[in-house]
Image 1: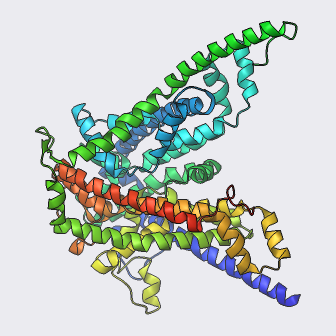
Image 2: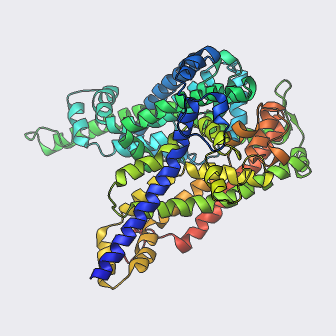
Image 3: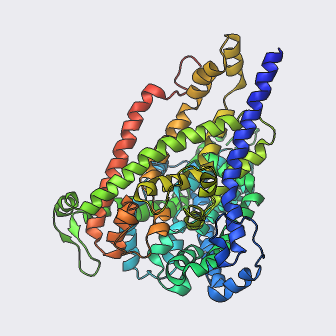
Length: 281
Length: 324
């Protein structure tokens, strides 16, 4: 009995040790990023590394706005994020509702087709879609980043369909007997009930658009159209020598911060989204 | 549909029911299709259509300004002689062969530990997941300096302990392992998925196993592992597909503009998609790049099909297994 207890305690201890060690490994880069963003450039490049900046240069956070158009980039990113997210929520919930609740010929085939593209490598569609947008004259605008989201995404459609199927039919039937039309049922009964699932979609879409790098890289070329991701990349490659490293760190911190805040605010939605879709590898 | 007033005759009921059903089905068909119009258009214009279009383009010479010009298999034969393309395959396969097994075993192991209901589990989960939400550009930025061989926080303990400190991002042999390392930092995603599947294994299975005298290892081997194998399988496929398409990290770390002619020392960071991107958006060789895209697509599909066939041997589905 005591031997069992000792083994039990020892194994608990080992589990804690591993998980805590891993957590530290996960956190160190964040801490280092923050600390570097508050240093003078020459203090970043020292051995042994200084963990606590001395002096703490809060002024970096003021100066960065004079050096880089961070606000402009942030505003651009927000424009793309807001309009894409609106589109993906509207188009995916409509399709999700139809696939979950309406019976019509061809429904299952269409749903199967859409679902089958979930794992389609983006690489294989990238060039023709680019050509399509070139023909439309949309290169250098935000439309290529926004418009595709207004045409549903297989993951979000699937996710919402699964959720809509759990809403009791009786609610809908009652409204139908009262003579409510389909669009009204959708807008006034189904959507409000689907808030948890819509939150998941919202969070996934916010995150995707805020973090996206490839699509802005392909479609946006003018500096004043850049998103934060492009701006941060450009700051490292074109504008700075090593003496701007602290600004790079400030900008990276500013870009990471909102995501972390959203993560803590909507942790449950995050976890559900990840587990439900499980697709973002 | 059971809403007809109770007083009416059965015949009237049936008739009203039929008419109701008829109207309903027309109405359902109408709105059913209306509601999926955007999704169907998206399927056609942004997914299925482009797949076929890029297949066609792969047999053409197409530089946007002039119309595509049919050249048969020329792009494909040219690829076989393209040393950089072969290099990009080498780099990518090296990455896939490191990242897929490492990330899956590592994530599964961590998920197993987390499933042990230890105190503070929520905070562990939160912290482990945190790096997964970091934008790819930001994480590349962090690690560009974090992996700095002289001043970075990763080499610091190695140096203090007198261990060999790799020149992560400047030594060609260490570049792919560095990208794997950065990828492992963002492991939280897979951990969460595994954790969800492990914790959803019904308690009764373990209780039954215990009655049969199964020890810890046996319980893992004969209960946990088979009951989570479908998720392992799924994660395997997703990880393989994503690993073949690494782009952002490598681009931010080693490439400065679309037509840059190298990717790291000795092109050690020339990932497949990076080279394809350069051809498409740096040199505007859209036919050539489409051929690359299709080869990657075929390889990924083939791998997926092989995995699907192999799953019969090792993936356990509760619904078909007679034993459950």
